[in-house]
Length: 406
Image 1 (cartoon, rainbow, N blue to C red):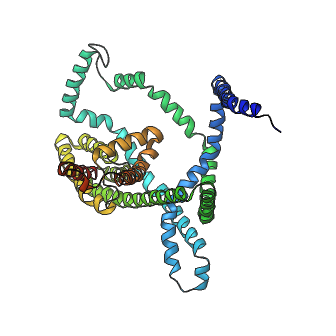
Image 2 (spheres, rainbow, N blue to C red; image 1 turned 90 degrees about the vertical axis):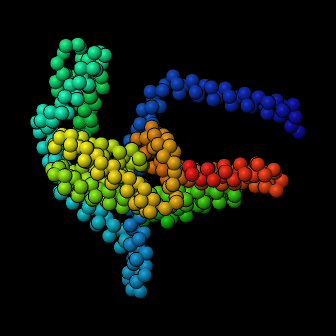
Image 3 (cartoon, rainbow, N blue to C red; image 1 turned 60 degrees about the horizontal axis):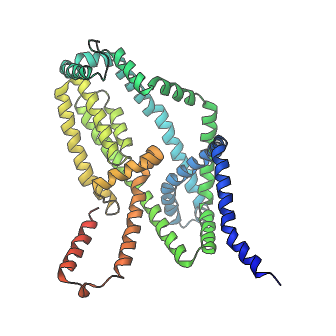
């Protein structure tokens, strides 16, 4: 027969024992932090290709699913039996063709435009007399404040570059960037591994989803399982819809801007149009940043009068895109207040850079739905409208309407 005293004693001591183990483990981790950081970096380097492979597979799965549904309508048994393999093969052929066109047509044009702009920048800078006057005025004021250079020191391209380098270590950052880029062998291997893993992920996605579903059923309650499945499906739907709509919207916006800049006489019309179409994936900030660069380039090319015209034209184009085209493409799912968009994109960028900024809106849309469901759940537990006075009833309706504007 067991001694109850010893059992109670063990139970009472056990939490303190766990606390002591936790404290010792935390101390060892802090004391040998560099070892753990190095370990996690090592693990990160291993899984990075598979992470990018998953992202590539997720993006390519969107057209792949469409092709597979299209092949599924065929009455041919050969096609029906191999529709999945044929859809994956078709998508990767299109993907390879896109990469080929980008490498052979788009990138050379962009490189040529950037090289031309850099080589002629001094001429643009010196030729824009009105801009030079404004810049000189601002520079004189900045010198008086002691921010840039010393009083009496002439502001040239050399002094500006030296100031930027002294304050932001830009040359050091460029050097480290080039060192990373020159690791060609590692980059090629990781890219190859990411592409290969994406192929297998597409082939095995149904089995993988089924296996995860089984695990959730076993280790969670029925209610928890239904909640996880519900919001996972919403998140997947949001990402797919966001990628589709931003791609279509980026093509439309990039095409419009390309035509507009061509009509303005800018020789960089194609590069700037492509840039605006790409940065459009970043909500709110992307198109503003792209338009600002386009305005600066046009101003340096043709003077401040054409710069003002470019500002007006791009502003109108963005207003049409933001208020007509995007809402039609996105529907009700992503209707947020500008403040919520800015907060979401800022937080997403702080956590995961550009990728976080792109993923912020679909994730926040699901979190907003979850919060709405929680509020509705607890609202049902509150007194009904008949049990509260008319003033509170009116205030509740107003609050409900206002909350849906976020």
